[in-house]
Image (cartoon, rainbow, N blue to C red):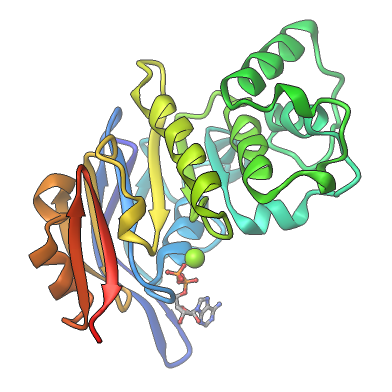
Length: 258
Ligand SMILES: Nc1ncnc2c1ncn2[C@@H]1O[C@H](COP(=O)(O)OP(=O)(O)O)[C@@H](O)[C@H]1O
Ligand SMILES: [Mg+2]
């Protein structure tokens, strides 16, 4: 079991941010985690990564019940790509050092990389189509290019779980589709870690994320197979009726009802 959350809640003062969430992710499954802004997605990820603890309920990640494991070791087995991480990287670094630093799940390079590390970094950069960025300054990369570097970095530690928190935010339609096609290739490779794709935008959900958890107001709205949940009818209900949801091939598109 990769994630085993049973009736977990997280409360802050008067606010219930997560309410009675039960969610099981098994090895080899790929999930999309979907909810509007403020529905509790990032809070859930913080909990999975051990930065916050459930106020009630039990949580076990990679078969380690919380409270019994060194979180720093656990975090090395989890790749978490988020805008918070992107903001913490120093802009002057070159993309290769950033990818290499993923081996130690650290910001900046502390240990001297081996030849194997360099080969692996080069291979990952090739896979994420970042090879041509070597020698450039990270700050000169476009949003989409940065996301690709961050994913390569996350894979450097050979994580058992890879979390992509709203990776398409800020991307134009071409950069988004390019990134999604690389994510699709990653997810379909046999050696892929279990992946969680987090988004507020149902149009980004790829069929390779065959399971979906829908979060609404901090609670589980529904969980199940993506093909069962991602129907125009169910998604219109999820969004509260004011949207028009249409199917385009294997993906959905969304517009406000005027
Ligand atoms: N430390 C905190 N204290 C109080 N409220 C918080 C805290 N962290 C998040 N929240 C609130 O919890 C809700 C869910 O936030 P978040 O998990 O970031 O949502 P999402 O990632 O789905 O957009 C938001 O209303 C946010 O303001
Ligand atoms: Mg978020």
